[in-house]
Length: 196
View 1 (cartoon, rainbow, N blue to C red):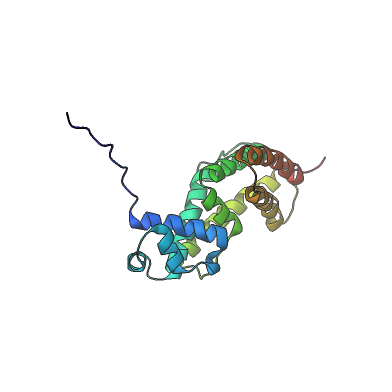
View 2 (view 1 turned 135 degrees about the vertical axis):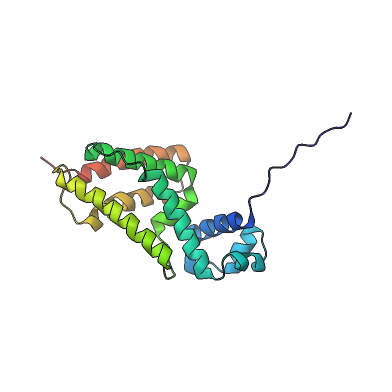
């Protein structure tokens, strides 16, 4: 009787490996600090293979930006709890943000650190403007209800994402980070909520 050797799962295609490697490196070191050969080596592809798919470092940077921002939007904004009070919406958003970071840590770090060191191409610029518009509309709606302090949008976003980034970057075990994230979410909401 012949023994069957277990088949190995297929390797992701080179483009997926390149994007995963670039996301990991850009999140850790920033776009400007990473050389294209480092990305190719991390992805286990030749430079020629990388440049066939991404003709320049800027093209790769834009592809990473779009991949990370679209994944974040799909995980947090795309199914929005319309009609719920701001506190419920915030808690849903915060929970989704934490879940996204647990599942896609490199993407979350990339998004929070915002390590853009290149010009946006037209597609990336349109995506950034759309996501900014959607995020700002949520914050404006919260203020209109009278339950959230009328702070500049940049301050509100800074309270939410600055706090999230700080805890995300801590070198602590996952369970401890989750507990800190829960406590941080409650503190951020108290900072945003209008005091009576």
